[in-house]
Amino acid sequence: MKSIFSAFILCLIGLDFSSAQPVELAGVVGRKLTFPSAVRNSGGLMYGDDVIGDVTNDQSTTDLFKKFTGRLQWDRSTGFFYITGLKMEDKGDYKVNYEGGSITYRLSVHRLDFSSAQPVELAGVVGRKLTFPSAVRNSGGLMYGDDVIGDVTNDQSTTDLFKKFTGRLQWDRSTGFFSITELQEEYKGDYKVNYEGGSIMYRLSVYNMHSQISVVNGTEGGTLNFTTEVKKGNLKYETETIAEVKNNTKTCNDQRFSGRLQWDSSTGFFSITKLKMEDSGVYTVQNDDEKQQPDYIYHLFVKVPVSKPSVTYNKDSCTIQCTVDRGTEVTLSWYREGEKEILGTSGPLSTPHQKLSQTVDRSGTYTCEAVNSVSRERSSVIVGEECADLPPVTPGKNIIPLCS
Image (cartoon, rainbow, N blue to C red; front, side, top):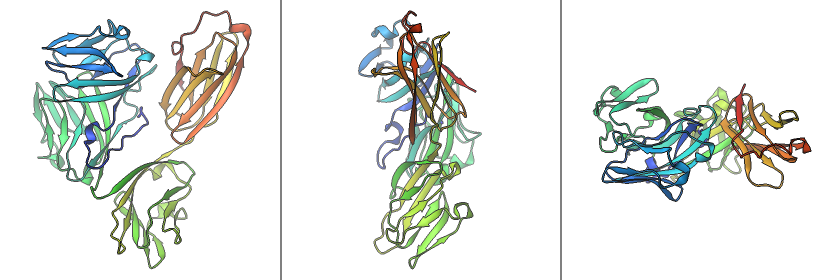
């Protein structure tokens, strides 16, 4: 669920995983966006460093910031702040402060509905507690895959719907958060919190506490090097051992990696060449030598690099358009030469064809930049004087992201 998100959250061992990184939210221009963290009696909402909403003695003030006047509201019945009539410029970091804690949300605003395009990445530790930081008030629930494992109806919870989580799944009425205690590796997977007004997807990874963890991005067709020395030990993919090293020789146990999985006897490093999208997942390097080194975990995300943008200019409509044909989690942006301000942006998306149109009112060279976590490409187009007499264009107001 991305990242829109496609951004992922790596929480360090021993820290509070539920709040280590902002929770990604996505909204749609013109629609309503609810921050699913309840504020009761006292608390507030911040936008960056500014307090934009305040609750004191169960009374709210929501006109503290001109930008949100008439659009920011607080629902006393749920305790949720929400913004109506979303605008592109509403994107950014928000912080909900409530009695007992706070949660930071990172909001992206789009022209289309990408609110569930990418799950939010969470990481937990075997034996520890994991909290899903999305409040469920009055009614809602928690799903694991396609199964409902927790239900809240009329402020009453049922958490024994799925045998696998019996005795470990909990719902805190005071915060509205579901949590799982005594995590096990088998609990990894996709979860969905349903609450009044929306839902949020989470992708949970579970690690052993003694392990060291790295999140890495790989490029389709590229090479991944596991920079952990192994003279005697093995490499696992998820729960399966795919390679073993013993007596200075390597044995490959999985045909999926045949001809692609290598071990360098001089460095002790494993590597995988010609990466495929399906190679994404969790790899564990295990040492079995006299040094008794801890396991090292690599969480790999294989991405398709972006293609070079194709750019066009329509003199009749004074519109420039940027198109890319491939790429994973691609963000498109338009810039005018010599200026730092972004004229328009869309994404991140992983569609086969992604387009971004922008109306212009000045001559000059305009550049479209296509970016994802593994690559960056640019193309430019020149606009003449024929559009110079148009009314000024407000950045972000004439963006038309299209998927075809």
